[in-house]
Length: 127
Image (cartoon, rainbow, N blue to C red; front, side):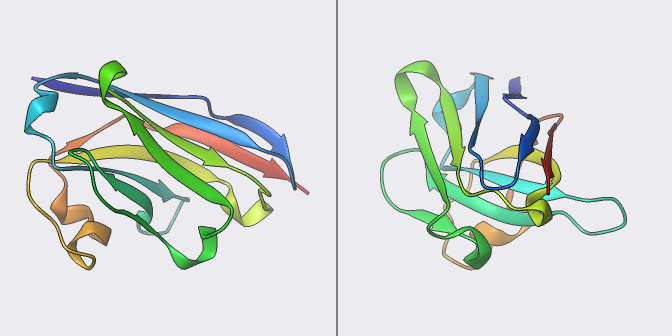
């Protein structure tokens, strides 16, 4: 069994920083890539960022490049999303996800790529 638990969400003013964490347990040795997605009511879940779990590249959605940094600590089985210069349109529920499949730069952005999901954490950015 695999469990992903997000933490670190909350209310922040526009321009401020916030760091999310995703703690993984269970068969983490099967992971190839872990990712962050976000979703607002009435819209589809959208890709934010991803990082190779086994060492390698990271990927970002264009609107967060230069503002968000994804990283992982394999010793702690934890992935992070450091967010800076937050904007009101970053407001969403943020989900972490893990895939046991090798990915390319296209597939990594698809929700269908991922086998496991966390329960989500709310991020609200006030203007």
